[in-house]
Length: 397
Picture (tube, rainbow, N blue to C red):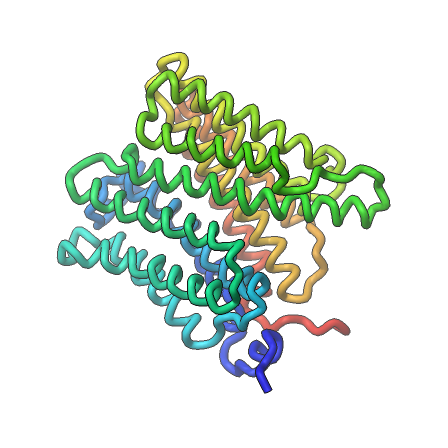
């Protein structure tokens, strides 16, 4: 008789950390968010010299976007895909081996200055390529063709990482290159697609449980598809011509469409539930980032780093923490409710984003933003790390 997902997880007798995909990748992803930020802050005050082939800014950008986010994507997909396809999840030593491959990539990038030329890109790109093969196998075996779009986004994310390496190894400033913009654009599309599914769903469930009459607009209707198609076109334009006034006008229009989409989801009615309103706040950084970048281009401002962080720290950082907290609570048998520590985590990452936005007028704000970022992810490790390492609670506990 074939094992169910629950039976397979129970059959694993090794560390609980490797009993489901979200556990090791959420834990080590959050650890890396802390370690990488500490290294970045230390390098800013010249306390250390990072032994990487990347320049300091490019290493920082790469390790957040392709390092941290790569781990969170793996944890999310290895948990969600079995639910989508009805197939068994990856557990045990294969899962541990995939984690080891991600860790090898982080080590190779950090110490790339003392490694042979090809080792860094080879090890770093091996992880998303193997992950893509695993996800493709599951989608094809489960005939879950609807979610090929997620695999396509993962493939584009991997291509962006490869382009980032090519630009950096060619002597360019990769932190402002095509690879980074393509990676950020792909992450924004992931939030648009996946957030467009889960935010209305979780909001609807909570409103129904609270016996409130209001309901969010159904997801992925005609308007949503229009927004997604328009976003693909504008983000492609931003990747190729980031400083064109036409790009700025397109970003302003894109931001307006995403804001209208967000308002249809009734987020203002969820203020009593942090696990729900944080999803709406995270998605709100998507139109805010588009507005800020669009205004920069239209007004001819050369400084886009602060505006871009509305997407990178705001949309990506807040959305990943929102998903990680909810998924950890639900899949480890805890009550799906936010305690004070969880609310503090959310407020810290939001505060870090806002502080980073004002570095152009307050340079010291970058250090303050880094401290808030550390508080958010160290808080996640303290509050959720034990649950990620322990077996799932039984219903009677």
